Each structure stands twice: as structure tokens, then as C-alpha cells.
Image (cartoon, rainbow, N blue to C red; front, side, top):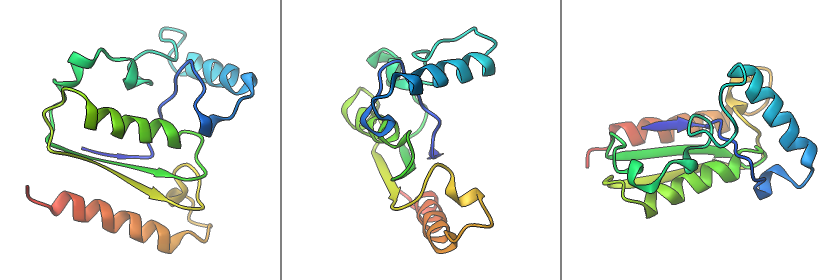
Length: 134
């Protein structure tokens, strides 16, 4: 499994999201719009850490790579996801975190930015991960 800058949120702010309660209000409003109000911020669709630990054992992959960017507000959620994989009942062999410094969420999509070399390095890490046999 490869997750590039996963879009995770939750009802409790994490350090990379700051401390402004308006941030959480905007996240709830946006997520409510996306889901037609059907799911809250602690639904496993957007907050996989809300899943009961026994559910993690059902994850159907042996290896996981999660990439994040150091200026992304969702960075700490990606980090916590990797930590949770490493410490739960998932039967996987490895969970790897790849972090790009000095960039924001999905920086590699912006073709006008100067992040080309960083994007190439991230893609090389993904390709290497996929090609690995364990």
C-alpha cells in the first residue's frame, strides 16, 4: 500500500494543525460538504485511527509506505498512521514513513513550483518501495 500525502483529519487537533478552533470548524464544514453531512471527522473514512485496533488486522497488505510533507497540516496524522500500523495487530511486515522537507500538501502536483527535484526523489522512493521484494 502506498499513501501519498493522505487526507486524514479528526475531531482533536494535532500539533501540525495548530491550536485555532476555527481550523477544526473549517475541517468539519468541508468534510460535511464532501459527505453530504453523513459522516463526522472521526469516521474511519477520514480518521482511520478511529477504527478499533482489531480491525487493523484485516488490512490486506504486507507493506505500507506513507509520504508526508513537513509543511502540511496533515503531516502529524500521516506520522501517527504509520506509528499505529507499527504498533497494532496488523500482520504486515513493514510500515515506512517518507517525509519531504520544506513542502506542503501534495506539492508534487504544482507544475509551476520549484519542487521538481524533491518530487523526483519522492517518486524514486515510491518506485523503490514497490519494486522491493520481501
